[in-house]
Image (cartoon, rainbow, N blue to C red):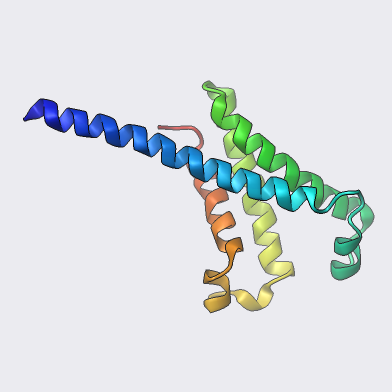
Length: 136
């Protein structure tokens, strides 16, 4: 009986690693796409719609693209640097998403629009990797 339980636990641990990898890829690719869509720099849409300076609008686009790439790459580095990169990408994602909620979607706080938008899941994904890093 004990060996059956240990075999089941071993399988579940492998599924947990796959689940974490899938979440990492989904959030990372989403941020890469969001950032890439703002190129060429400076992104005129951000400048016009949010009245951002060209430098700040470019920083947003580069930060989105870079955080997605770093989140994915950080998962494949199996040492403290990979953990650090994952947490740094998670922090960047949380900061970006928090500002998006405050600036672009301030009318969404604690209502149906917030919880039915993809943005809340990107925020939670960033928060997950900020807290978890690369720990198993």
